[in-house]
Length: 231
Image (cartoon, rainbow, N blue to C red):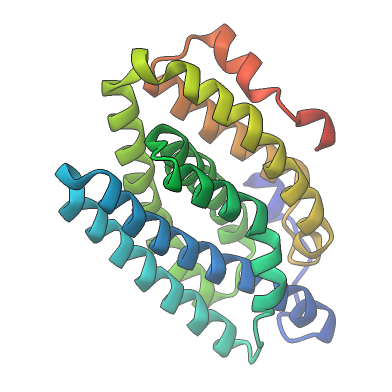
């Protein structure tokens, strides 16, 4: 975060900032909506954890309201149509996996990839956010770690029988993250969020999650490398 502390003063009300913010804000709003829906679907698939997953889905819904308030605070209308397209591929992959009953793939997409992506983005955004958005984002990021933890714990308990599906799901979905980061890089830069910092923080979060599940260092390096050349 130190490199961001020396940023020149950001004009949160300039047209350039507000234009970029309309897409970034929409992405976090839509991301929380996707997470809300995904946890409800997981509650159907993992009925023994239904109450916990419904609780997580409600938290995501509250986060969405918080980020909607951030947009209103800057008088910015979020570009939700852009955000829906942004998440379209991960959304489709999750839906297909859910229809096929692939719980492991669903957990990798939502509890690992999307949560790690969100945590990385929020970590990099907090030091450069306006005061209102900073307070909301700081409270949200604490919750996201608990959501990540649900997936980690379940996958760790089922590691041996899940390992092959995890590797396949990683192969299919991790390259999408690098495409998403590239797509949002210019807007993120306007908000003083460096793409390299986003990539680094995501890799750290994702690598730690894979380690917590049971993958060794060599596995993690191999799994993390999928699609990285596109970043």
